Length: 353
Image (cartoon, rainbow, N blue to C red):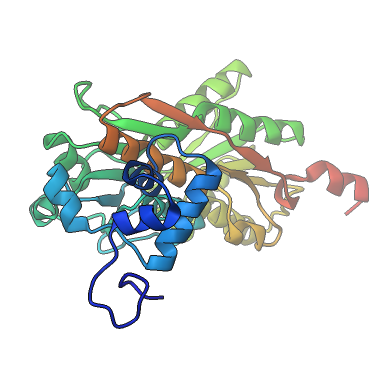
């Protein structure tokens, strides 16, 4: 595909005016369609996109920077599970969020830039980000601090606990209270009566809210829900922590792990103790992904719609960056529980296994 006015060998690059001419629309309409702004019908937008593709048109980031004062770079940084030198943790959840963010950013003419969890503030100030997305923030992320300080749009997936109320931050998330109640309610419906909660030691809002909800859920039933906190979010760490609990508390009959590593660690702990899953120990996870579906037995998970979260996150923060209008502070994304064998105690009892 040529990027030079649609003619191989030509030295002149196509401009947005060429796209507008080929698509038979005004310059403003072509700009709005290619930047995801304004109201353009699907038919007209399809014609404009086709014209841009035929001409090999792509917005010039330098020209955008000169015109607006900010680049069309969208920074992305992980908070909760990002570790030193790591861009993307192993959990599929994060990959799907990042895929959603990058897909929507490119669709709107922005360039996503992924930053390691431990990159220093001084190393990114020269990048002139136009906006940014922080995934599961702890509150100390360098990108978050830079965007707040420079008053540029920033969105977090999950709120920042103890964030200065003056900070201008958008947020998108699942309803963590509803997710936790749904998971614990499912275990209860399957016949489990003494659940434990496995979390990482973190200040992320998802962890804080899940713990508070589990404690309240237990109190309403006259139960004390054990909270198993894992220092490192690894399956081996979760295994050892749960083994310690089971050795001192033989009443626990089920586990709700809010992270994939916690659920896989619980499965390893069950094997180490010789416990049958789901007959003697039920396991549910606050995320979903291939590792849970392919485990044996397959583990019940919560589909948090991570790619949808990513797409909506990018759309909201880019709209704010381009239009300067913040429509809402927080958006909530739906979820669904994916029931699998790891909690299907009733079916196993009926089958006589």
